[in-house]
Amino acid sequence: MYKLKLIFVAHFSKLYSDVYHVYIIGDFGRTATFDFCKIFIDEEKRIIQEMLGGKDFYDEYRRTMLTIHSYLPMIKEKQISNFYKSGNYINDSILIGFPDGMSINTAIEKLCVMLISFLQNKDNISTKKVITLPCNTLSPALLKIKEFVNDFDQITKLAERHKLTITKRDVQHIVENDSLEFVTVAEAVINYVTKNKYDFVLPLGTSGITNIYMNEISRTKSKIKLIEVSEKLQDFVFKTITASISNSEVEIKKQTQNIKNEIGIIKQQYKGSIAIIEACTDLNMGIGIVSLKLYAEYIASSIYFNE
Image (tube, rainbow, N blue to C red; front, side, top):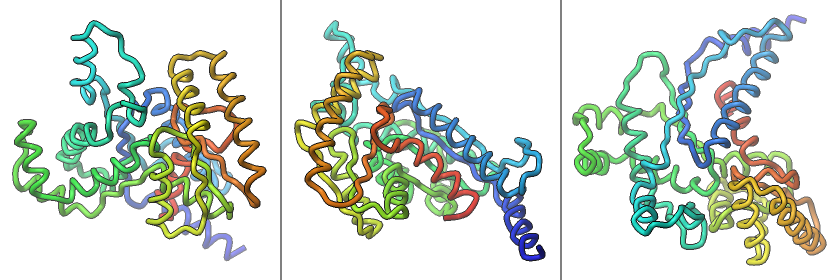
């Protein structure tokens, strides 16, 4: 009984430690961004209730602040302008990670401008900041952004290009800030599949998703093996994402069945457990583990248990 009381006190004290400011780079897509927030706050509530040992829950127990920041027409201003000038409607060639689509690198600088504006606000409430981006495809972008905000010269040049009002002291404050945490979707997924001792992981997402997860496996030194997506399966995934964005239920159903058929073939080829990951925020087919859910829960757990 005494031991349980000590455990409860240890957990309870976490509720009154540092405040975390969760900065969410969103709109990839917007519905998924708010789904992420809902999953996060539900998981946060569950964790707190567990810490309270069944006592009444109040939102006042939460120790996180959430900020959502994004506006795709600003990030993709040049690309959207090209569509308007040609008199055409926007199509999926504007999407990041699609064939002939917008490259990750073209988005990074705009995302850096947004983040630096946020970091200039040296509030006294939150001492720790978690930078999140609920998008599998942009996992590498978030890591590049992390490198960017650690470089005094790059921030200074960016400020000049975009006419940002920022002092050298502010730049130094950002560069020397050791309370910033950058967490990617790929990190959360690989952490989950490794902990749950899967033999293989099969991520279904946009172009380059295989490389994204291959790099994360290498970075974390996980022993899980990666199954590469075939061109045929990738084509079905692209079509499903496009159908999800346009809310075409008939097409979603058709392509989901095509994906199920391909996964059935893959399962016959591999011996061992396969973690099938719906590695795109626009995918929710019910045939795999939803990466968005893993991501939100991983961040909540990291904040309260420092995992």
